[in-house]
Image: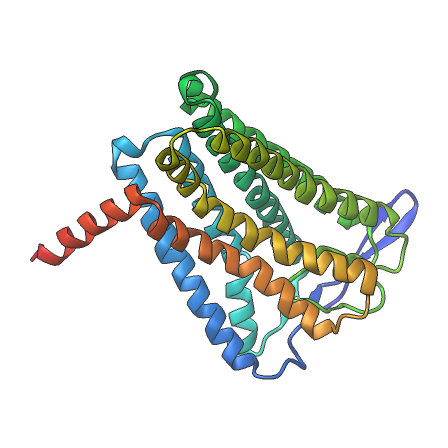
Length: 320
């Protein structure tokens, strides 16, 4: 297979036929980890599809909150589908080659939906903020059209921004190594293989990472500061407990998603001595586990979902 050569601004750009993913080549007990990831993927699909089905089939659940939950479920399915099947394919078929265009596609889908994951958690925080702090104004501040608009804006922003990030990757020339040390076609490990200047790609990646983590996280933290102030001003202990109980599932999701990302980021920024295999393992877990846990948490912790899931299970059981 030969490289593809194009001319850009009077310079030759070399695109290889593809890349080789080598993130787990030296990882011990890789078979156990792949089995675990397969289980994670199956749970992600089953629980998220169940969530979407239950919400879609029950008109009483067609509310802004559950529209945001469906949005998160769709994002979770696509996010784990973008990486886990390819990891299983590499292990089962011993084929770690990824064609160049498919590499860019995988990169696009992963980063667009990891960004959407972050913003979807911020949207759920907005729903809790309005429901607890402004209960009499929900019909003004948190309606289905408003929720649709919020979700639509995050999708347009994330898909558009990542499209630009991927487009500038085509300006890079790969004339040396095509071995990507990650568990998929990761943005930074790929652009670092380029033999021409990748300052623009580095700037876009670092800025996007900071914005897409810190902006939603800051909004979530500020929302919960306001929520806690409102809750502690309530006179009834029962009302306090009810208000806090409605936030538990969301707080679990926020902790599961943001904590490992921040830890990995801080270790990479200040320590820089993290073992490459451990980094790949930590990143893969930080990306793959939250979509699985999200659906389980909402299925088990949300009373409306749990009740309708039990009704559905009874229907399936008694049907011939």
